[in-house]
Image (cartoon, rainbow, N blue to C red; front, side, top):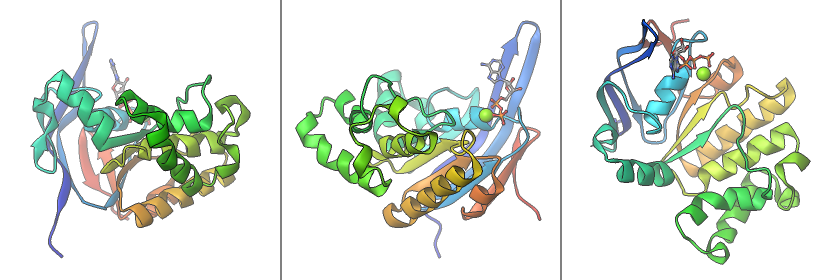
Length: 229
Ligand SMILES: Nc1ncnc2c1ncn2[C@@H]1O[C@H](COP(=O)(O)OP(=O)(O)OP(=O)(O)O)[C@@H](O)[C@H]1O
Ligand SMILES: [Mg+2]
């Protein structure tokens, strides 16, 4: 089958300075992820997984290298372009869901569309459909504080999918969940990947989640390498 790269990372470098110390986190690493592919990224704490994911989502910029989405380098985008890219091309799911506490589940899912000035009556059918996909039809009016941890994470997944992103980026999406709730979220992510064909790049310490992906990469010494078993 011909490769159809959705995301290509080339020679990415990223360091942080903290006082006199220079922390070299990414040292010229690369990867290519095909359209519809699911890739898990694992590695020791502090190896740079979240840093890499933030660069992939345009939340931070690398010191060097390129990050191409369908051939377009996001590192060369100006601030306005990168904000638009983040809103429309990628969906984020974090370990802690970052839902807005004052808003209902339904409103939280609609927010990415409202930010783009879409009218609530235009966007709510899609938000309702996504809440159905994540199995929360009977919780749409609940605020985050009235939902369980797993339900909150499912709302966060629905919100991440609101703008029909080509790529879903997730940073330890099961990290804050008990094993049984975690396995439900894992099942949901695989179901979404199959049914919606979304490309997924998921950082995780959870081997059960990693196993549901097509490939596992390990971030070690600032470089990505395939998992060798
Ligand atoms: N803004 C920052 N300033 C200085 N150092 C930072 C900054 N962000 C991250 N680091 C350092 O960079 C390294 C990589 O951090 P990162 O958060 O990417 O690790 P991680 O692989 O996601 O770890 P974990 O599995 O614990 O979440 C760490 O040593 C961290 O202390
Ligand atoms: Mg991290």
